[in-house]
Length: 256
Image (tube, rainbow, N blue to C red; front, side):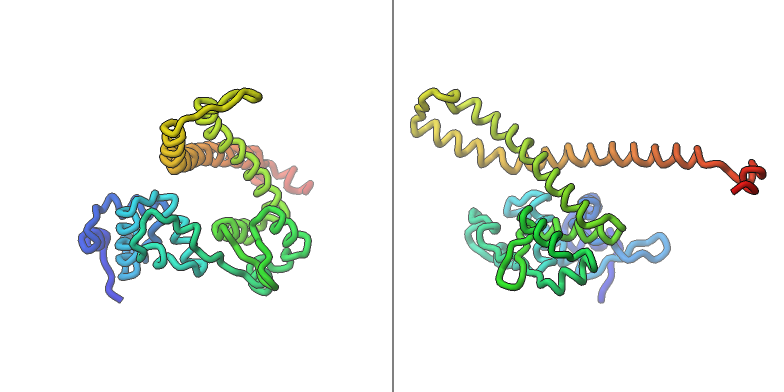
């Protein structure tokens, strides 16, 4: 397979080197093969860049592109979206959900694939019963859960955190919707009178607000994650600093 340095890859894809790095930082482009200090990209990276370019041309945001690429990883047909002549039709209304068998869930989560955890996942809407299998409407949730379980986090804890995060995001969404509702809708108990022009304004505002709100929340979440990670690392550093050094305290070492 042909390989490229980043400058050559950018030239072949007709994008800037900076954009290649941005796509990689956002998880849209897999990292290159490292040889010493040089990163080598291949034809699959080039194809991915062409795909990202087509999706950007159709108006998709980085967040949506990431979701689509993840969906493709789980067997969803991205080409069904890109090849349609109707870019206004939302792919989410036509995609078929990825499916997982119980055997596949066991391979992913091992002994933690219990009836209780499956029931909890179903209750949260992460898994949707489909005959003897389960549909997955949001593959990224399953991917994130597997990552955490592989790192030693109990699946039960992951599911409970998913429920808490979902509630928190529901509150965030209510705030964004409330901005529009408070502007256009009558107070509780009062009659609502809207003309056709106002209804049209509301529809256009909501349509424009949805992707912007999504990106704004993602940006704020990234900032909050950086802050929380920094605090966790600082706490770890303090705890390491508080650990007694046996070499400096032989008596403590003998006592242990």
